[in-house]
Image (cartoon, rainbow, N blue to C red; front, side, top):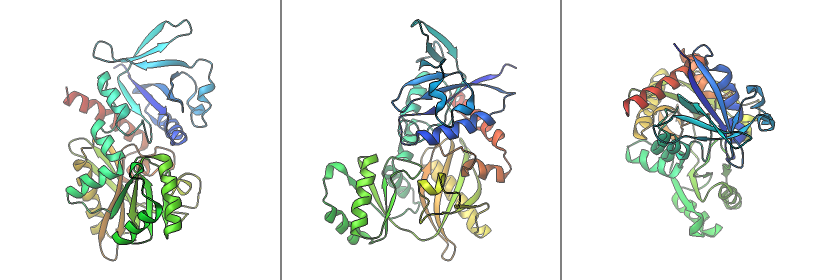
Length: 359
C-alpha cells in the first residue's frame, strides 16, 4: 500500500510561533515513517507560506527559513486537485498532491478556525477540530458562553473590550462588585498563557489589562479559583475518549508561559493526585465539554479541581495543545497506553474518517 502524504504545517504569524516550531519538529520525528511520507510547510512570522525540503531538526530553532531550497507555496482550492502548488525560481508552479494536513499551529491564525476554513475549501482532510469549534474554543468569551449554557461549571468572569474604553478604576470597580481580588487577566484569543497575568489589587489589574490588550481586543477577567490544576486529553470524533488525568504544580505562582516552557522546576504528576471517583467525574466533564463545543480529533481540557469539596471548574479547552517532548497531551496518552507515534497515527486516521463521513 502506498504511503499517505502528510503535510505538517508549522510556524505562523502568531505569538506562539516558537512553540509551534518545537511541537512540529517533535511531531515530524514521531509520525510512523513506514506508513506516511512527510512534507513540511512553514509559515513565517510575517505570514509567508514556504515549502521546506530540509532536515526536520532545523525547524525547532527557527533556522528552517534560511534553507536555500525553500520556495513559496499555496494550497489548492476545490476538488480538481488536492494538494499544494510550489512556486519555483522561474515563477513556474509545480503541483504536489497531499492526502492530509497536520496543522501544528498554536494561537491566532492557527487554531482559531482561520486555517481550518482554508482546509475546508481545499477539500483535503486535516487533523484537529473543524472551523467552528476551533473558533469558539479559541475565544475564551465564547467558550464561557457555550459551556455555561451546557451546564458546565466555569470560573466567574467579566469581559472587557478595547472599544468600551473603560478607565482602569471602572474596571477595578466591576471586579470588586462582581467577585473581588485576586483575579486572572487573559487575552480572549491567545494560548500558551501568552499575555496572562494574576492581579491582586487595582494597580496590578491595570498593568495586567494593558498587557492582555497587547495580544487581543477582548480581555477576560476571571475570579481566581483555588484547587489543583488538572488536565485531561480527549481524543476522537463521534465517540471521544478521555485519558487519565495529569496534575501540574507550577514553578511560578501560576502556570504561565515561563513555567510551561522555560522553567524546569514545574512538576507534572501523572496520574493526578485525586481520588479515582473524582478522576472519573473530571474525565466525564471533559468529554461532555468536548461534545458541547463540537470538537473532533483532539483537545486538551484544563480544570481546577478541589479535592476537599469535590468542586470541578473547567478553565479552558485547547484544540491544538503543545506536542513538544514535555507537553502534557502526548504524555497523558502515553500514560494511558497509547504511544506518541500511535497517537499521531490515530489523529491522522480520525481526520480521514471525518472527511469521509462529511462527504
